[in-house]
Image (cartoon, rainbow, N blue to C red; front, side, top):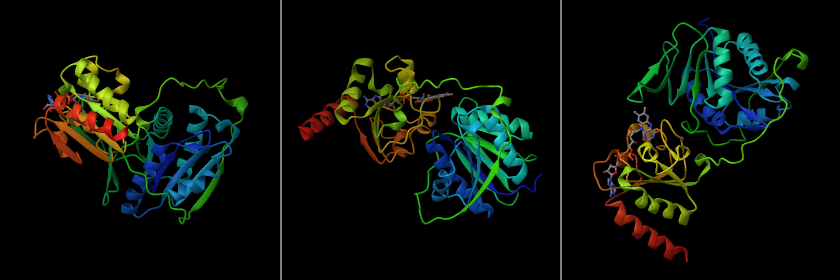
Length: 331
Ligand code: FAD
């Protein structure tokens, strides 16, 4: 069993569109595969999805295993699990990564149970111990107070689900070439225990994860009325509004605006962190933003450790100036 070789990424597609986290995992998987000197493979299941194999190669895979079947048209645990197990039992990877999306978590846990192997959930850091070929999957533990590195020493494949927006995808490179291996799944629709009757999309929720600019306020804003300055700046910039857990607990924002370990993970182009101390549980949700602009009256606040630009000052004085400047610039 410990002779298994290769790093695999489960490539999640919905209606023929590859999930962003799968591309991020191909980037992370590439590093692990290079360290272990083994190929990186993408695992693609669906109905009429073969043409996506090329994209998976452009984003870093050496090989793509494709299973196509009408029973894979929509995600169902039973058919997807069987497709993945068919491949894993035949080709025996040593590491197998999944996005920590609802479907990714679902299929990963079913596959881990069937293959009697371990699964680290909601990983935020990945590395590999080359000599022992051990995946080091790290995630916050004990209420977020420590990072735990979890190993799966005795079983293969070593599996992990990884949070979206934590790893970085490689640049799409159309010069990359690779091998596509097709396998067929012998399940008929009549044999399926679950049927998809209708898919109803939730169009009410716009995720902060898609915002290019986020203005995030913390407890340092003082009260709900002052927090209005955060909304005002965000409105001027066409930005999303975020808050720390303390802000959500104070009732200044609803939970779907919370950023951090128990909220959203975001990577906007510009992230304003205003009156935020920079606790680790907040940083894990925003530290990969492209530009971080922090405003805090304490020069030693940890948020300055991750920020691109820092303003040491009282947010209640700095924000009105910023808002005035932006208004003048835009009109
Ligand atoms: P504080 O830590 O109180 O910081 C306020 C900051 O504002 C200070 O740095 C202060 O110097 C500054 N300040 C004060 N007045 C002003 C002013 N007038 N102008 C400028 N600066 C000012 N937190 C999250 O954010 N997201 C999570 O998902 C999350 N999950 C958690 C999960 C667990 C299991 C645990 C234990 C904690 C979690 N937390 C989370 C909480 C986290 O540990 C911190 O308590 C929280 O992030 C602190 O929020 P804050 O920065 O708004 O407040």
